[in-house]
Image (tube, rainbow, N blue to C red; front, side, top):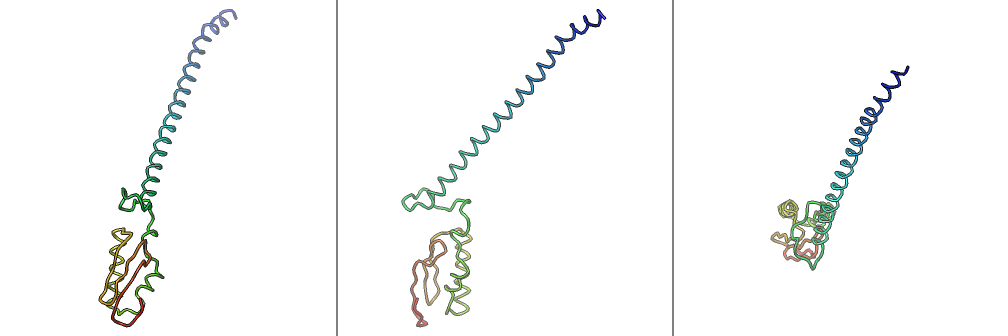
Length: 143
């Protein structure tokens, strides 16, 4: 039994070293993962802040640094509602209706927020998908 205890005493420091190394690697791995998460979170926060600043600048009437809608601005801010399109084309000939809707579709495809569309009997100023102004002559309709 004496030799057995001696072997156990000899193995204990080696086993202790192995266990200490295992925990040292485990803590180093944990620290590395935490560092990557923190670095990623900082980068995401900075990107989100930059996006927010672009969107705010786009809608700020006094700031003209952002002239094209950022991709984060959803389509509804510059797209015309179906009900507005129905009102826009009301009492126009089929040819003028087609022309008006085509001009709106082209402007929306370009993501324009302000534009003017015209047909022989009328013109319309559009801003953010809403009719801001209009005028015309011809059919006797009040625009």
